[in-house]
Amino acid sequence: DTPIDSESSEVIEPTEIGSSPLCDSPVEETSKPLADSQESSGELVKLHELHPTQAEQEPLDTFPIEVLPEPMKGFVEGISNSRQVPVALPAICALGVVSAAIGKGLRLEGGLPDISTPANLYLLVGASSGVGKSISSVRVASVLYAFEIESNIRIVCEDTTNEALIRALEKNNECLTSLSTDARDAIENLCGRYRDGSTDEGILLKAYSWEPHIVDRVKTDALRLRRPCLSITWLVQPDKIDLLFSQASLIEGGLLPRFLACQINAHPQKLDRTRKELPTELQNAWNVSVEDVLKSYRSLKSPEFVHIDEEAKSILDEYHETARQLQIGALKDRSEFVARYHENALRLALVIHTAAHGRNAHPKALNASTARNAVELHQWFTRRQIEILERGNAKIRECLEDRVLSLIDQNPQGIIKSEVYRKRIVNTADQADELLEEMVKIGKLRVNESKPPTGGHPVRRYLRKT
Image (cartoon, rainbow, N blue to C red; front, side, top):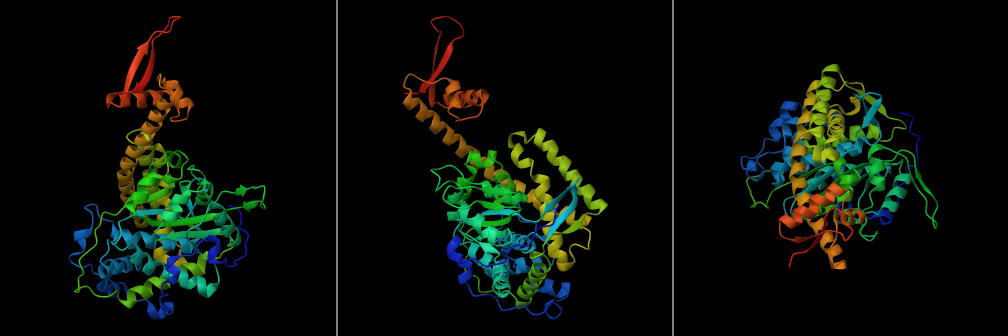
């Protein structure tokens, strides 16, 4: 990795890329100095034991809160308890905040030969209104906004077009986090609101892996990014999760496989007066831990490196092989997603390690316990992702069928399978054959088979079933 040049830390006005509703919320009081505010582990634990009724709104396969280090774990449980929200909501927000705090300041060495892994995560959470998305995010992310004000460094953006995002990255050391408690507009932009329905994910692909990105326009100066770094934490309504995963181009192009996505199946809760407010000790401990990471790593000109000890490396290598076997076997049809399993596990491991060690993250080796925790956490996300994919596949199939029917309406004499892939409804003749025959099987199409006047194999034409 080559050194990263320092760019201007100028703060751009919110109107350029969209203001955040989180900025309108009161900023938490400035945390106490580290030495004064940190409590012993045992004392903090007493403050965040979960309320007995908390499990009632958690899914059966509940978020593995035990993999998170203190003070993140205690803070997350404290919010869950006091605000009556599922543990997963503040937990995922907390992972996103630490990822944002690291920025370009740390990379993980040894996860793959000759390649270091960054800490920027792409997180996507679907949850219905009224279950605590905004409450969770405001509490967890307030430390980022406070640091922006104190340091005059832009960290967070929200509703932005791709071009505005590129300009914002250019002005802010090529490093930002996209954080939204209602990412409806961001997702609609991504799905092509300003591009006649074609998806617009170029910069998001490049900024995940820190790849150069150049945009040339006739009427504007060229936009050139050397090593853009973006982290994403988007909380959305369930319908927007389905919209994203029904976009075949976002899957095939590789963007959605980069996301750690989940659907939180929770419902608004009855007001419970027996619950206590979030203890200030937990909020302070969290604020101090994140500020520690921000001050130590966020503005570094070139990254520090965290090394993996041999036992941890063995655990993560085994997970790589498990993913590879799935990619060529049981999950072959989801190869794009499985190909990212190991890399996302490495990123989670680096974030968990940093949350545990703060400013001492780079001198300390990433150990076996952290590696196991990262794998367990990633496996939780993969189970949630598969659930979303099942729904998304049904939506994609429905969209493809509609396009086939529209093509037939333009050709009343019927269509042959080659016309389906020539129109780019699918990519290959085999896929066209599979789609058409399935539509015949479910009663949407009928087949008219005839021999050509010159002889040869019969031609199968597909028509609407009347």
